[in-house]
Length: 144
Image 1: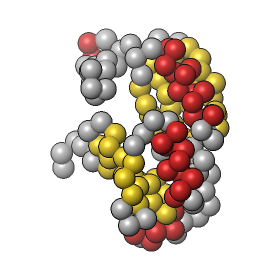
Image 2: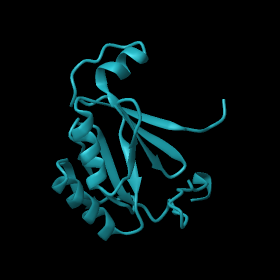
Image 3: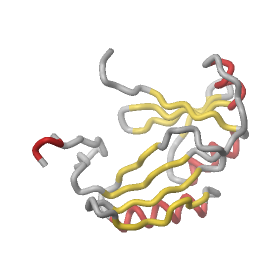
Image 4: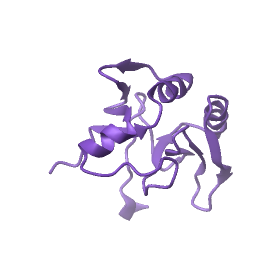
């Protein structure tokens, strides 16, 4: 298997509300058959009804909002961008779950949850450089 993630699909309880939230963050979505697709750099972020996604993946839907063991991350180029994006998410209807703060490892981050409780970390990490197009390159950790 090649090391690649192509799509991330979030199960949502209200597709219109979820779409409005992400569009308020500046994302542009396309709706096709009750599914919203966003181009997110080199991968796609998809919003789909929670029940439909659970059924399609062979699971039961459960309740929205609990921690599911996955956190999405959005790296930015500065501390100011971290603060700005957390504020934008809150104004769009998200909930800041961790205010931005510096870590002992040299990065600055905070976190928010979208209206369905999907957690997002927003981070500025000088050790994870971003290309002009936003592509993240992991460092060679054994050389740090």
